[in-house]
Length: 195
Image 1: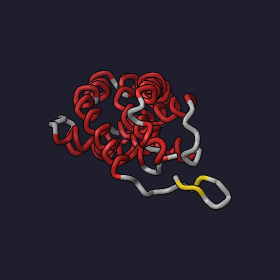
Image 2: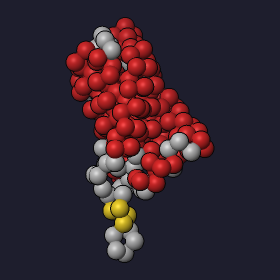
Image 3: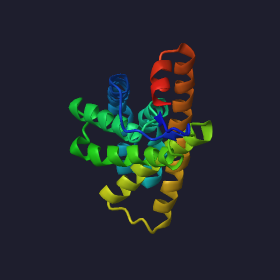
Image 4: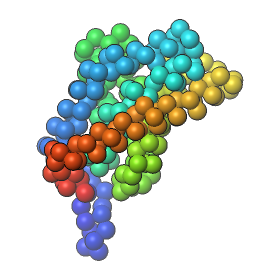
């Protein structure tokens, strides 16, 4: 972010090299982890239906919430998730090419929450909601790709379950990781650049 002459913060798309490297590291590290965690909602949805896909999908959403928190710029959450799914794809995630629309929906789910505050509010409730909305993005993609009927009770309920699961499984862990990283001082310089 940069400041206007009046002192207000202006949203900036200018990423520093350090910010890009950080998003790449988060995307790769969580992408490797998500080769395993990403299978949970896939198998849950395929074998047991939409409620289990929603219940198990939150763990996949941590990277973009954390990336959006640290690099407080437009599309930081989405870029982190796209690097994440590219890593998963290259690492042999059996979902294959379908990872990319899922990743876009998941990244944009978190992104819309951060954008709604103009990238200025990164409190715990915002982080929780970003995790929840990332998970909702994923669940909506399951509804589209599995051709579930979104007007029936279980599928409507699955979106609510995904929201709660994302809050607990992604938003809260991302918040705790962010606060832990802040205490170490490792991300202080990057966060100053984004402020």
